[in-house]
Image (cartoon, rainbow, N blue to C red; front, side):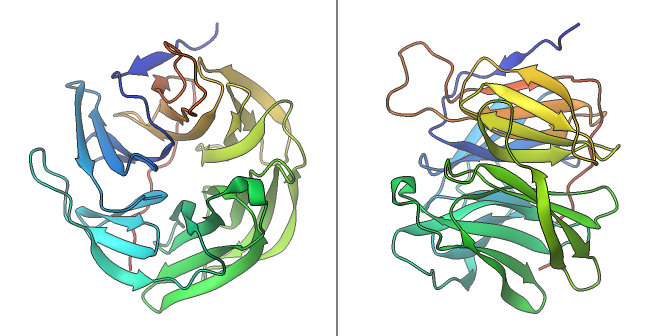
Length: 292
């Protein structure tokens, strides 16, 4: 029987991204990139709160009791989010982008607490491969990869020794796997993992306890699960075509939370940009907090 998809709240995000479950809060927190907003949903109470940001945040990660934000010009830290109090990000490290008009996009921490995040030229129509993948840890900021257009799909296997990365630009639209050195935080042995989705472009992703890779099929309204050997074994339908990222959470880590994108051309009354939750019959892994 297909999993029942539940819409969460009534918000419509321009680009809903980077949902993170924090067990201590028992809540999902995510970013609306062009809306310059952080959102938080507490499933037990169904409470929803939001905070304005001074810049676009492409992705977020836990950092102590607060948050690490990858924004337009660098990485920032903010204190724990409290309803009625502003989020006031403090700069951690700035980035000298490779081209004008860039920002951070997808990212997350590896199993050891290093923060990895990619950058992109905001005008996707330029198809400019100026994006880079950065690592941030106690030693500072380092470039791991370049020649990326829209880095996405960042995820790690349960043991942390395989890293996944997609490029969701239509001219590439594929996912790679890398061997990942957990001692140095370095990816190597890059190889194709998914050459093409059945429909849609690869966007954000999550990994379950069995090593299954769940990838959003942007423009297809689907989330796909691939086994560690690259075999498609499940497809979930979502009532929004431009699904952006998924993340596991909930008290049993068995709820899949899915964000989506609302383009300017979205039809009135459509669910493009809404957020959803369902129970797909799998369990996810808790995110590691940033050690930087």
